[in-house]
View 1: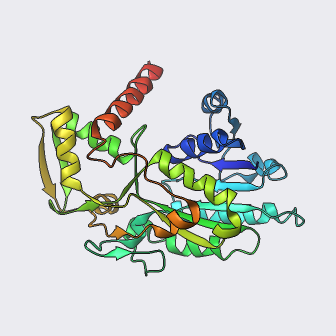
View 2 (view 1 turned 60 degrees about the horizontal axis):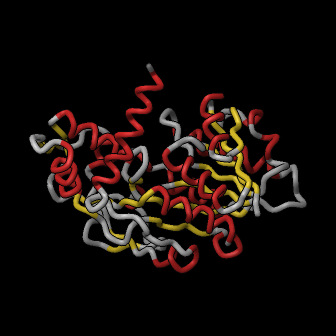
View 3 (view 1 turned 90 degrees about the vertical axis):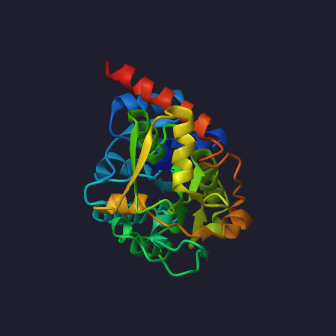
Length: 304
């Protein structure tokens, strides 16, 4: 059993990763910024640690305890600078224990491939990132080539399930009766359920001898048409809702209007045992909407 430190442990990805490690018998330390969220982690049998990813003094003391460090965090202010600094901070922290070997797992994403609908890509294919993640390929290489730890990069698709992530935005927009999609009705998305994704992180840590220095695309075997996904939500949530299409005007909208390629996931399957156990976005719409709605209601209740 390993001991794991997870940055971003209360996020959409990080919380499920923390749960997956705990479920598999590992000891987990989850970094979060608030005492309230740390308490929520404790209820999940996860050691909640109040701290800030960008301030090593709040988590560096844990390096002597753990052997696996995972970054599932994302800072919307200067994300490239913050992620790069964290890699450097971790590399410096582990140097204090030269007799030990550490694992560092970095969370990237499939947006680094850009627009390439109709093409099937693997991890060895060239990337063409859209502007919002243009900095990620360089950080991926920094992780897998690092000599201070055994680095692994996970590239998830758009995360579905539980609190919703971007899919929560789609649910919310349909409820209002009007949803805007970007480009046209032919855009496609690559997705993965948060629980299926979380198991890959566990496998990467447990099979580090095979995973180190590697990048893994972790998505469902088929992409889905974005308009089909939204129409499924409309049928369930608000049959009167309408869709309009616009050209993207900012980097985030560009990401939402991607013509995603299809992914050959054989590497993640063969090395890490990745399995798609959950339905895709269309087939799982009702289940995922109910989960998101319950979570959103709980958030509102807590605010009041």
